[in-house]
Image 1 (cartoon, rainbow, N blue to C red):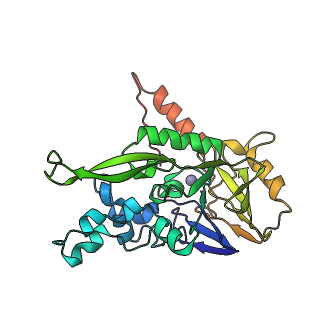
Image 2: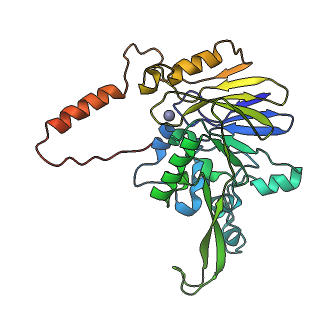
Image 3: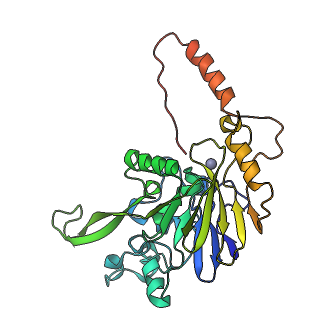
Length: 310
Ligand SMILES: [Zn+2]
């Protein structure tokens, strides 16, 4: 089994881990590297809508990989084919990577067949929308529900296109376009295949056997992934987890079940990440709940909540 990390190394999140064996290949998460993204983009300075992937590739927020990305985001042939386009402007409209279909045609098989999601935080799912819709998604039912809500709440954002790709298709030139005579762009909604991961049960995804082990994190539906390659070799990917949250309390809690399932596992590979491993201070949402209660109790009138999802 070959393992390559295209993100998430020496940084928080942005995980994109490629597992390959005998022509079978799948990704573990395909997230947005939020720390690095913050060096280039901000609330009102974002990649351009029609050039999202190309902008992201140009500042190395997304790996230059052939055979995984959507053709409509890689290249704008309608612009490239125009004779008057200066040659040094071509990279603005052509990412210079081969899209999914191109590699499938040339090599007779897809570069990767699926992405397995550990959970629905942006730094683990935020760039799935760049991937060709034929790359399926494996996730827990709760993660799927969260992604559906994101899609409904944030319909204009590419980071909410994990489940449904809004493929950009050139339409005929129109005098009524914003630039008269220019082609207009239609969007076609295409649903990505979703494989529901079974908790403590195995399903087969892209030639690998996968078992989802629920974990305690700051979002419902999070899981570690136990992956068995065609050769029988196993990798355990923990995703994000903690041992001191609300799902780590009480009899039969998630952390206890995870411990008993993994106690004698001895996989060939353990992939994990830690952001506060050395911290002595146990920080979880019970302190947040306490502080919020104090604030609300001390407020004389109406209290309005906002919730930032990331
Ligand atoms: Zn997370």
